[in-house]
Image (spheres, rainbow, N blue to C red):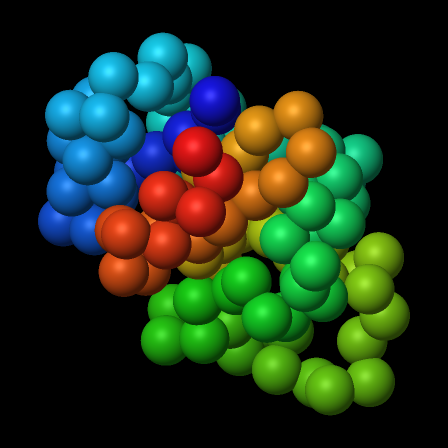
Length: 111
């Protein structure tokens, strides 16, 4: 399982701990240090079953750059690449599914 992780985030740390307690082998990607590509984000969106705006952090100051509801899916994915802190966290991803760890127990559905 891949965990898109922010070690400064309590929910992200709790999600990682929960997965480790369950014995899950986790590859950690600190997405703020290693931003995702548009293609990777598109794949995550598909696995989540969500549109990009639905897994963006609306409270971040950078969200003002994408607040226009008429922006395309592509433009929103590009905004997350440009401003990786817009990505909701953490996101756990398997080969076929993904889950946002808010609350952390959401990722248990992937097991």
